[in-house]
Image (cartoon, rainbow, N blue to C red; front, side, top):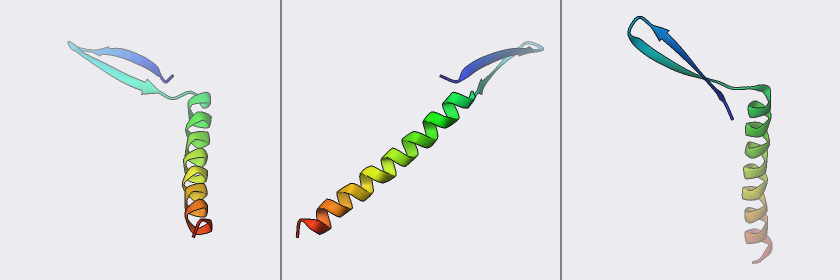
Length: 49
């Protein structure tokens, strides 16, 4: 999970999400998995005809 950093600037609370290295790796893996899934569906669709 991204870390949430809260900073108080005057009377305003600012929240920032800071991504860790693990989050970036997870996003890349999810991206690859979704692309592979779409390609597999297309392959099944074309191969099934």
